[in-house]
Structure formats: structure tokens, C-alpha cells
Amino acid sequence: MLLSHERSVLVVVDVQERLMPAVHEGERVVRNAGILLKTAALLGVPALATEQYSKGLGPTAASLRDLLPPDAIVEKLHFSAAYEPSFMNRLDALGRDQIVLCGSEAHVCVMQTALGLRALGRTVWLVADATSSRTPANAEAGIARMRANGVEIATTEMVAFEWLHRADVPAFKSVLAHIK
Image (cartoon, rainbow, N blue to C red; front, side, top):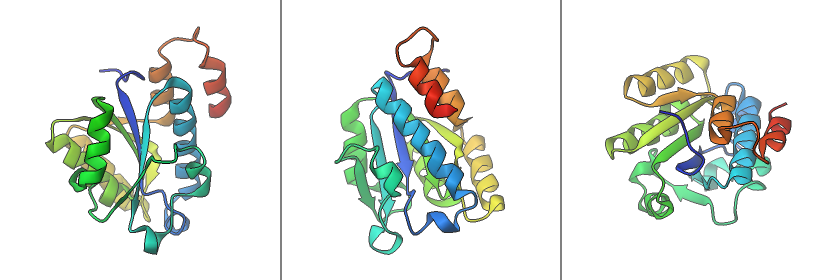
């Protein structure tokens, strides 16, 4: 099944200022999450972000905060956002059935959110190159477990071009500029 910008929601999980320096290739995660947020904005894909215990881990990375609507960030204490009523209320209100996830850490909050959403019957895509953990082994194990449990694995460019669907749409050149 292909992604549709009309059916998708982008969820950025816990890309927080104090956590990202410890995350393996954290700059890549922030950069690719930014590309996804810019593409989502161009194509009308709603975006949400979660923050795990922001008092300790800090807010969402500033470069991403600037790309999010003011009310898009949801604080959580559960590792899985699927168990946070405030997050699920926001997600359900959007009325979209394709959930595109990225963030950190792949083997904890991202995985638990993905598996929790799958348990609720949601279709979930993980953007692997916009996701990581403190160690590569943990990231790989989290991605493998998500794949084994029915989560579609994609890359930033796969998502962007599936959302675009065609090269002759007005947003194509702008999206291409973000990717390059």
C-alpha cells in the first residue's frame, strides 16, 4: 500500500534537545525529521510531536519546533504515545488512517508507539532514516521488531515522493529543494 498525503499523519516521537546529542547519528534524525515536517506542511499532512518527560529531556529540538504548529506537541509519560489519552484524542480528531512515525529512541518510545498503534488496528510506517537510538544495535533491533509486527519501513525520500505521487504538482520543486 502506498502512502497518501490525504490520509497520513506525521508523528515525530521524542526528538528532544537533551536526548539528541546521545542518539547515534542524532543530526541525521533531526535533519530528516525536518524534511518530513517541511514536506508535510507543503502537502497539508497534519503533524504531531511527542515529548517524553520534557522537564528532564528538554523540549523538542528547536529546528523542529519552529516547523510545528503551536499546538502540535503533546507531553507524555508513557513510553508509548498510544497509551496517552491526550495524544490519542489529538490523533483520532485528525481522522486519518496512515500514521508515519519517526524519532527516538527506536527501540523504546518509537517502537512502543508503533506497536501500540498497530494493536489498535492502525496502519503504521516507520521512517528508518529519521529514527535512531543511543546505539546502532538498539536501533536495528527496534526496527526489526517493528517490521516483524507489521510496521511498514520507509525512508524520508520514500515518504516524500509517495506523498507527492506525481512530478507535475506545484509542491514538487519545493520538496526536491528540501531533500537536496
